[in-house]
Length: 84
Image 1 (cartoon, rainbow, N blue to C red):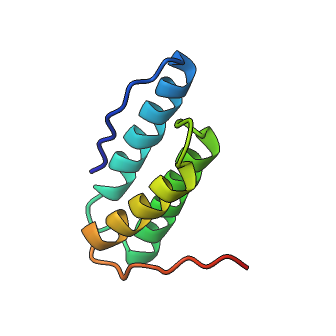
Image 2: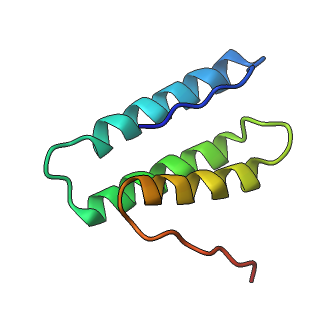
């Protein structure tokens, strides 16, 4: 389950984050969810948060940490992101 706490001054960003997180929590708690479906749900959640760009600074760093937190939380291997 994902919970994000921060002060948001733009209601449309807050609503998009709430929708992204609600969709993720619904998908990830599906009984019998496969490992591939977990990875897909995590990828979509992380991508949506990154594209929403909710923070004034540190969006990439925050999402990178969230990605590995979610992978580990759901018994998946963490990833190392590199810049090409």
